[in-house]
Image (cartoon, rainbow, N blue to C red):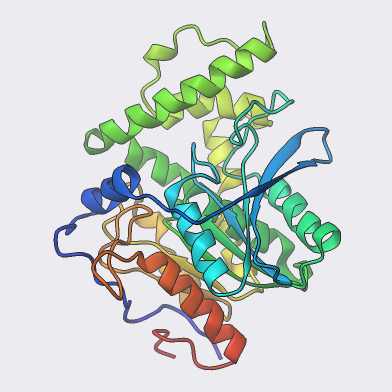
Amino acid sequence: MSMPVVKASSFHPHPLLNNGHLQSIVPTLCRRVDGIAYERTRIDTPDGDFLDIDTSRVGADRAAIVAHGLEGSSRRAYVLGMAKAFNDAAWDAVAWNFRGCGGEPNRKLRSYHSGASDDLATVVEHAVSRVGYARIVLVGFSMGGNIVLKYLGEQEDGAHPAIAAAVTFSVPCDLASAAMEMGKPGNALYMKRFLRMLRGKIQAKMNLFPGRIDIGGYERIRTFKDFDGRYTAPLCGFESAEDYWARASSRPLLPRIRVPALLVNALDDPFLAEPCYPFREAEDHTFLFLEAPTAGGHVGFVGGRTRFSFWAEERTLEFVGGLASGSQLPGTGG
């Protein structure tokens, strides 16, 4: 039996946050999450680099592995909120920082990127083999969601048996169309903010690798095509921005996913274009659930059981809990 598109999303936005821009911006500026005490672990990657992992423990033998978005970290409010929600539900939370996002530059010239499923594999292996978690749920936001879905598609039937489910939000699963969408005039403020933050990463990398990377003329970069063509592609082993987008996108791999996975992309997400809503793939899928609420913005979803709750956390635990109980998943329409 296939379990395709979720026919009726349970998300109802806060009445004062009634468009995608407000849903995207207000939580970023205003949300604060207390009550999380991380323990940091540094793990080595097979290529001689490192990843910093922050774990919030409640003494469980199960854990949610949470991946942040572009220029995020384990300290972002949406990651802390998800960690707290899992802790309250008696799960440990493992928030991993992409290369260079944990507070200091990574060792290698390679930077983090949207296709870095090899790094997620390293985190999963550490959580299961070194820490000993018996059950894992993968959670990803935006870029982190793309990495989660790409990883599961690549693993296909070989996914680690400890991985019980995955939940992802605001995923640019078709990177080329998302990059073009972000280049539109209506998204200029977001684009400028990302480029300003990324400039710091490039400057730090240039200090570590003088002569191998150059920040000269950075002010002329206006779009992700500019940035990815000049930096992401050559630093990470891709031929061009277009080659990077094609090889790093998770959408082509969605049919191969063999673990129950929920993909939630709001229809008013200002960062996403039409190809980022894979209805066709989900319609005939046994494992992929696509939920496309009319509202929610990008990593927003403010509103839920109360007006000021964060529905992404509620929906994640609902999905995971439904799998654990073996009951019909709420809102699937199946």
